[in-house]
Image (cartoon, rainbow, N blue to C red):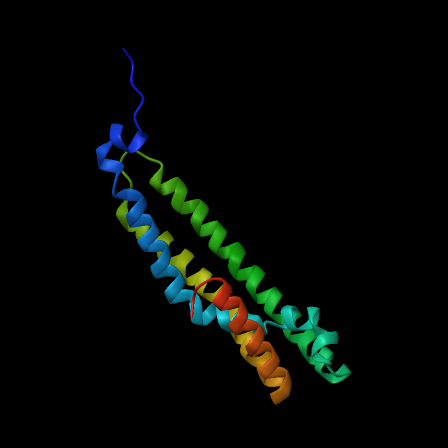
Length: 153
């Protein structure tokens, strides 16, 4: 006689793994929430809503310049991060990885990812300063609604 059982019952060491992953994801969301809220002000998001925000031609020009500069910096940092992540994968794909090399590539990738995030975060801060009080309040309301929908606030 054959019986079917859930996969977790067949592999008891995996039973707590899903809960652990869910807890980890919640922690990541909580840590990232302030940055995600600020991302509502990235120049590309604001430019996509230029009509509803009633942006002036000067604001559009400033936001376009911020967007272009941030994209250039972000893309360069993201390419550097990918390079180091690819190298990290190679270093880890041997029988006995050199932990010194693992650390070096991990830290380099982490630094590059930080630079990519900083490019977007600083552009969002500068873009926020480009708006009027009324425009900022409108984007803040949109960001609040978005965060409430995602359950992070």
